[in-house]
Length: 516
Ligand code: GDP
Image (tube, rainbow, N blue to C red; front, side, top):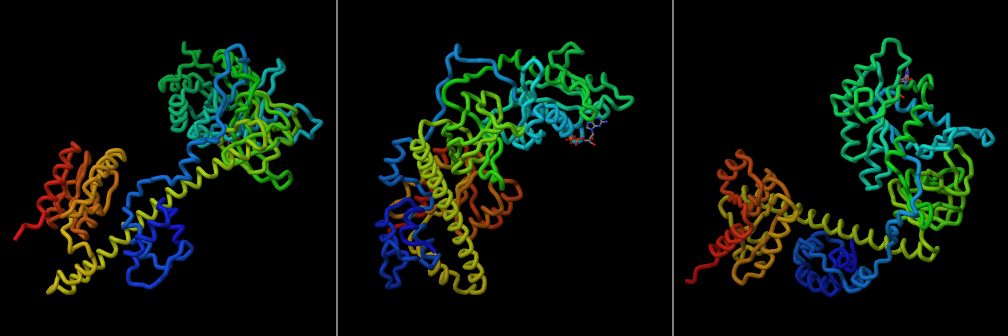
């Protein structure tokens, strides 16, 4: 149930346009429409959509254009000058086959990180923790093992991981998810450090594991390659120090650096409503130094930092690059994966929130109009099917009900379905076809379009609407061709857009009524 104004908003047209279309769409009623009139009949909404053209060329209204011109979003600062860069600890993600000991390893490492008993040593799960060596160096571990966490962070472009620790159980060797992890690390261009686990088990064959890793392109130092491998037992807590040291060495080799000054940048690792402390989010700092009082924006959330806490529950005063901290003080919670940016003032944060809100509303509207467009097609299709069935019952007068149902039938019409290989080609073809839309003698009616091969569904629609199927750079499965021929549905395959368009023109010409 939408009001006239809602319909206008969804269609991105002005209210006048909707009033005008209502003259056609609801010509049989006496309703006096105002902008707040609720349109109860979905059929009328569909008619409006149809008359407005189903493609929703998104012509922004004047007030939206103004908004777009003034981009109020927060953006990352330009790259820091080299002299401002300081070494930073590595951020590590643990991956490997199931049951090879990822969780046990993280637990063991997390427990070694609890040095300060004063705070009860209760580790909180905040999505990451730091392990500090006696030398003072630290390594940050992302707390959720496995593919999902790694890809989630990557998918959002966060690129938070510097090194992948590939856990391989020595008794089991290289398995499916080991190989998968190697592939993912490679794709993300993240170096691997191998942790050969479960060396406490009797009779494990470490050489065999090293050799099969080499077969998958991970050649460890022992075999002359450049990948570090450390033998550990997560269960017995053996050689965990060596593992962490190897990671700091890896960080040095990679010359991991960041500017600890300037505006804070980071990524949200986790965000939740904690029953004790309220809105809490873990931020992995990637640049700058996060302190109490900082104003942050992240996704649709923002905070004035009230308190920072490390994973072992200690309140901390500041969080330099590569450190994960639990942040309190959010007015609105962000989501995991959101980029965190520091801004100058609360006023600025509010401005950014408002801008982002308006942007997401716009996206939602676009989704809505797409949904309506699809629904319209489906409704037309159902209508046509019903019509077809009606025809089946009244064989003697096939033209009678048809004309009632599809009014345009009084006007010669070419109905087309357009399929193409990619969005871009379909759009291009529709753009060209649209210029023929107002042909004076023959109407061109686009009944359906989409990306991909010709499908049985396309044929059904084509048959129901008496439409010609135009397929650009896609195929029609042979069984469908046969089916189409049987039912007299023309399918036209093209690889050159202008040929396709010429073909449409010919079909249009063929439908121009002959002068008597
Ligand atoms: P994940 O699926 O990779 O997270 O594996 P888990 O950490 O859950 O470990 C799977 C099983 O292997 C558990 O029963 C662990 O106790 C066991 N395990 C993990 N590490 C070791 C180890 O170093 N030695 C031995 N003997 N068992 C281990």
